[in-house]
Image 1 (cartoon, rainbow, N blue to C red):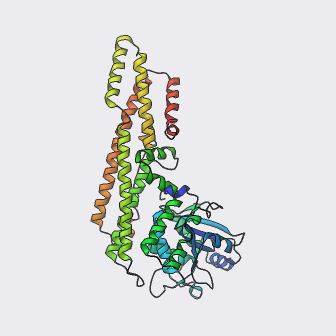
Image 2 (cartoon, one colour; image 1 turned 90 degrees about the vertical axis):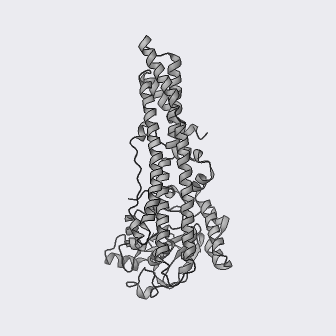
Length: 445
């Protein structure tokens, strides 16, 4: 199953989230039909799409597809409605602009009431303009690039229950829904992004800019990571139980590769949607720009990690102290207090700095494994495989070189501890370990 992104613990709505609804009276016919067809999750009778940090879009019977701000959408639901949110395992706030564009593209589509069992989720001229709620959701996600429709095991209509099941199988994860989810302060900060686009007809560039501003407000984690010095951000990771610095970097590398693959695929396959060709190159450029931003972040953190790890242990001084301790043992059978104190100070500094930089103590790091999941690159069949291979090779080799440096430093710190264990008792070692463990919090004070 794909690894969750840094947004996995973010409590507010993120563009691209799907909100499934159950326990609705109006949905009883859909539930009955799904149960008759033995579909999974038949109780999920409706789905709406979060298309911006403040807007929801949905298709309803006897209505054209429409978008409304969260407060208005909540008022339209019954008190006993139950919400279930699924979030993409690689959710990105940077997708807000593309999702708003995709939502505007399908705005005012008719509800496919007369074509429920035959309508397609594919974006074809013959079917464009008709959707049920789940079909509209998939179309928006597909057009924005959040989801590739070919990943779904369906060739025609898709219903809410099966869609929930298929996305869960693809690694989409459930997000807790309470009052917090729909009440982000960005509502007061920006208003409805969809309404701004519709009413003032501002340029696409301006709309993307506003989407990015809203995204920055809603994603405090990414905001922190991109605004503080990289070395300080490493300490943020050491405080987190969700991910470590190297795990975050590995995840970013996967993001870069997929963004590059998506851009190459779209560049080589061309714009196949009959309704809109004008924005094709612009969308590719946005994908490439985002990949470049993430590449800068990767190199920033890798360089900071190298610097932090290299500075954690003074190898020359450690060798000097180690040789001195052994010499004292040979001559007198005991190490001097001065030597032991110097070794303890050196070890505590090295282990603490290593922990704050990597999120691991030296002994733990030898068991750490970092992998790159490129299993779904096959969906970008039109991508230049040779060029994509060069991108993967360059990024992963740099990552592996840093990982080797970290592993080598962990080994040196481990040897320093071995010497320490030979000259102090277990009680003293326990006290030293407590000091090291507390260094995570101390680094933030």
